[in-house]
Image (cartoon, rainbow, N blue to C red; front, side, top):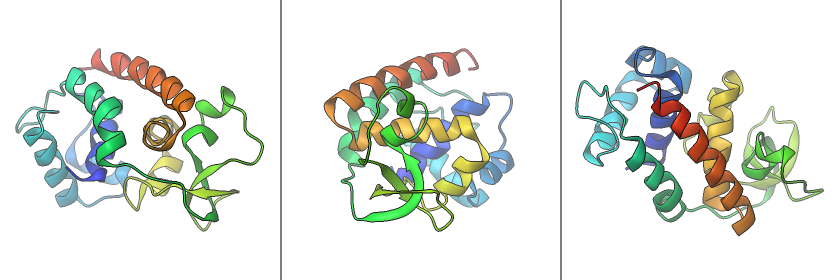
Length: 172
């Protein structure tokens, strides 16, 4: 697994089985078609999605991996202060539940509107893809909270992520 595989999987879940095609995933993720195809292949090997034609996502396995695997496999520690786009507890939907004055986490992005500690995004084009799709942005921010948050932040993010994944399960 590579970190971008999580983003591809989340985007496919968000779009629903009948809505996504390789081209739509590629465009929505700002990723090449071949990168999306390789990513889905890795997800199939990890038993998160069915083997080609990639038409079934195993929500139970995805949920377990996001909540219990990602924090270890794709762990991240806050870095230096930079300008960027809010993520984790600093971004929706957590920023309305967890209020912090100066403790912001951001993805580095030259056109960002907030300063905070760097959290490395799951893949380099995540800021552009997130800005184009608010619902996808929230999913990535929730995953970042699970990856880098405090115990309280992880608990709230995990609960919200489970709810969303159950909603997406109905699309499959």
